[in-house]
Amino acid sequence: MLSLAYWVHMYKEWRLTKNYLIIGPLAYIMLQEFYIFVTELAHLCSERTAASMSATRLLHCDGKGTNNKSSSNRMAYEVFLGGSCNPTTWRSEIAIPTLQRLGITYYNPQVSHWGPELIAQEYEAKQTAKVLLFVIDNQTRNSAGIIEAAQLAATRRESLILVIYPYRQGQTILDETVSIQEYCDLMNGLLVLQYLMERQRIPIFESVSIALNCTSKVLREEIHVQDLHADDGIRPIKISFGQNGMDLLMLREIFRSMDINDNGTVNLEEAWIALQSSVKCNVSSMPELLSVVNKSEAYRTLIDDGFLAKKDPTELRINFEQFCALAMESAWRVKSNGVSCENWTNFFVPESEKRDLYVGVIGKDQFWLETTAIPSIESSGLSLYRSSLNEYNVKVLPQELQRMKNSRLILLIVPQHSRGITIMALAAHLIGLRAKLVLCVQTLPEDCLVSGEKLTEQAVKDYNRGRMYLSDYATREGVPVFQNIADALQHAIQLVQHLC
Ligand SMILES: *[C@@H]1O[C@H](CO)[C@@H](O)[C@H](O)[C@H]1NC(C)=O
Ligand SMILES: *[C@@H]1O[C@H](CO)[C@@H](O)[C@H](O)[C@H]1NC(C)=O
Ligand SMILES: *[C@@H]1O[C@H](CO)[C@@H](O)[C@H](O)[C@H]1NC(C)=O
Ligand SMILES: *[C@@H]1O[C@H](CO)[C@@H](O)[C@H](O)[C@H]1NC(C)=O
Ligand SMILES: *[C@@H]1O[C@H](CO)[C@@H](O)[C@H](O)[C@H]1NC(C)=O
Ligand SMILES: *[C@@H]1O[C@H](CO)[C@@H](O)[C@H](O)[C@H]1NC(C)=O
Ligand SMILES: *[C@@H]1O[C@H](CO)[C@@H](O)[C@H](O)[C@H]1NC(C)=O
View (spheres, rainbow, N blue to C red):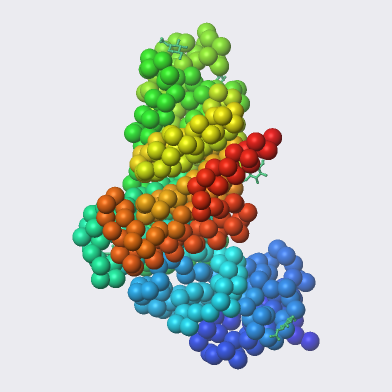
């Protein structure tokens, strides 16, 4: 009888060469059977050996090992190649040759003959892949791609490797010139995606080849994407404060929103809570907070001011400078912690900040909100946060996300008078975070006008593809989706009345 060591050795050899992708389907299946066999053996041996760990990681199988198509579908690929498809060629020209050279297995959803039978296979491959390599390329509108990336930033934060090729003013997409207005909408979508990624500490790459290098590193060293460094070529985070997606503007806004009397001071404890929700940490008790402050610059400033010792700690107030020091401290803690805790199901909300509903509308729907929705919500005895926005962008998002978090239910309207890229990305991200949500998703009509600009047939199709993607995803996750805005509001009101 052959020893287990022999099989493990063989397994490692073959895993290294990983040549089944080039040796044809029959040999591929034989090899796969072999992998399954080795996996079983490795299981018998010890769960702790490196061989067994890489074996179970490579395979996602039930061990039956039947020689038919459905068993070959159970293969787990290491990398899923998602994002922009036609007319882009990043998969065939860069990603696939490189992955083959490195002996890394991949699933390519861009096939010449796509059929519905591939849906399940694609889904399985995405679920089980160790790395999701997504490219948002400037040759397409990426209307589903941006939404999916925002969703994965919430659900697969440790495995998402995202490359973004930003748009350029005056460029064309599929031979159509992109108007200034559409350019701004697309870029705003990318910026918001970048912001949502930063909140999860997911790096963004500027080139597929650097992303492939990091893919290989993540697989080889079994690390999370959050563990990658600047040396690995990750793009410097643009909106940055202590490497944590916080900038002065944002801090200024948080501070101002808390400084109700406008006298330049905020409550220390409340400040910490606000910062926590912005930078995702989980320190909450007062003694713990004091010990944090105690170790920080902020503490020293407080000492110098001489009021830390004499007052009840819960009444301590700090100025903007101290607030910034506190933010720096909390950002550093999150960073050194390595744990992000964007948790929408378990967090503390001060009573005064709590609302029943958050209603998110953009553009023209603000009129509907003021004249129809608000009276209806208030007459039902419910409290609300409302966005009065023309569009969600990175400037308002920190505050809006906090308001959403403080609400028992969020109602978002994806309208038929806007491309809606950003609000769709936001909705997908919230679904991924398991926020309590009701959606109204309106399809763009054929002769759609956005701010007086007529969309081309191709653009309408693209943006409706995004709407379809979002509706499907929401429905799968049990989030109610309506086309009619009044129905959505009605449902949201009923739902929140029945939430305890
Ligand atoms: C493949 O095997 C599974 C389970 O062993 C079986 O249920 C299925 O019908 C088979 N499929 C085909 C196409 O033979
Ligand atoms: C798309 O992005 C790439 C990479 O940043 C850049 O080289 C190219 O010029 C851009 N294409 C257009 C049409 O802007
Ligand atoms: C990828 O990594 C290899 C070795 O780690 C390095 O030589 C190469 O320059 C890297 N490529 C890019 C595009 O960073
Ligand atoms: C500023 O206003 C707060 C109430 O919001 C109050 O508690 C605090 O004492 C005020 N500070 C100063 C310096 O006036
Ligand atoms: C924060 O959460 C992490 C992971 O859940 C945990 O390890 C850590 O102890 C928590 N920190 C505090 C201060 O509660
Ligand atoms: C600050 O921390 C030190 C030890 O780390 C402790 O001795 C001191 O009492 C703390 N001060 C306050 C005000 O909590
Ligand atoms: C959020 O907190 C809840 C309750 O403590 C916990 O069950 C859940 O796993 C947490 N979610 C995340 C993403 O950490």
